Image (tube, rainbow, N blue to C red; front, side, top):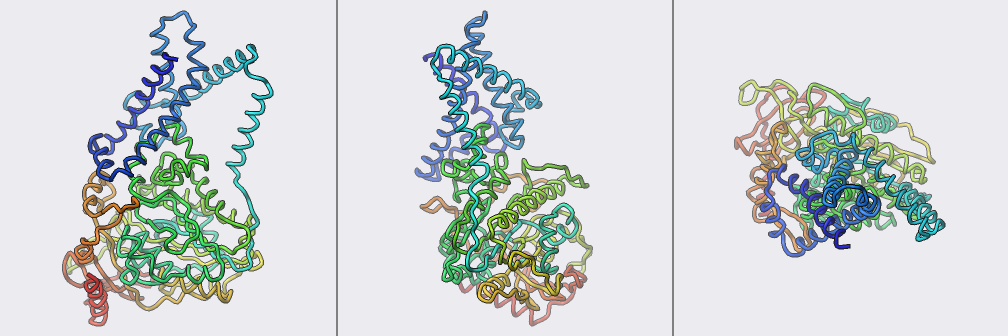
Length: 621
């Protein structure tokens, strides 16, 4: 066995070289990266070590299979002993690399490996698989000939693996029709109203849902960031009242605000929240949810991903049991190399229980920047590679929505139900939205991202649709399209009224809503030249680590950060806002579709409302 352990050590070192190269490709040296782990504290360090140990354990098992099925026959070939060792090591490593290229092309492992062995490794994958199969067959036949492996035992193992894999793939299906009406909120990250209307053909499932119910054409987010948006959805309140001023504000400052879950709990609902990326949204059971589906939140989400991005661990993430072994990576869009779009939906549906009625809020993050997925099944080609990735990501999410709604139907959850489809905010991709004047100077209205520009229609207008089922059939609405202004603040009242009465009222909306920006980092202003390492450097000093491993904004920095917010009043026919950068008010008239028309003078009524809102922020600190 001495030979085995020597070769195993060499293989483990060689197999981890691409991981270290992947860290360098992200703009971090190994010392910088492991310095971050050390600074995070002992508990985080131990957890990271355990995750890496699991990866090494999986690689060890992989190597052992190759060793006893391939190396033993190879070692008897008429070649030198050391030559056989070198050939076997190279074979093992290249087999590992080919798995990554073939199944996980977006893995940093694949990129880093290409620096060592070049592209095109997937072409050799079938050769390696065939050779491995021949080796395994040879080993089994030799064991059978030596009567060391009873045929019955071999067949039993194969049958057991088949049954387990089938169970893991299909999951348990239950008839979960409860006595109360079910409520489902389906959220799509970064889907602007403009992008949806221009590309409905790419999103047939989402489009079909909205066409089946009521579609609100002028729906807006109040703050274009995921966490504040979802807190407003649940509470019906503005960020200044909920405490969710920014992403990653400490949960203890936001989760205590009254929300819709209290009323649902009193009626015996099972309350599920599912999200497939939690780096900037730590929402958890403290808000009143019974179950949260998705990756574990915390600093380890940022730290562990590069360390476990190996071909074999990525294969493990396709199975449900890894949610306990590798909770920061399973069902995590940020682990783009291994994330399974259908696997996440399967886990959401697995949270359904027979008996109680359900409130399920599911948010899909694949459509968030950087718009990457290994599940792109067809290329969408436009004039911009950024736009191509965005639209392809929306296609992936649309497929997930179709799978989710069909899963609800098969489980009997759509007998009497309400489905609300929305996005947390829009997304700007640098396109010129219109030609405007600002300070009486002509300029183009163009931006990137979300939560940074209150005038941008692409950043702030969202999708909103309401679909009702009665006795398993769609209810045809009297007005399928509504053009009045509404916002995420109106969702709570809609849900509560439906649960109490069974009636679907129109979203109330209002003539005017307060809107505000989120945290803005200069390094993230332009997606075309964004460098992740620069964003990390600019944002690192803003956050602190809690005792339970969660990242949160430093409370002592909030007065400064709040003073940098733009705050505005969006009305039906105008928008007025205070620019923190310019330290003055601006105003624009709005066209019938809500887009900016021309610059006007800020009116006193709007200025007073904005000033009062900003003053309430100041009074809290």
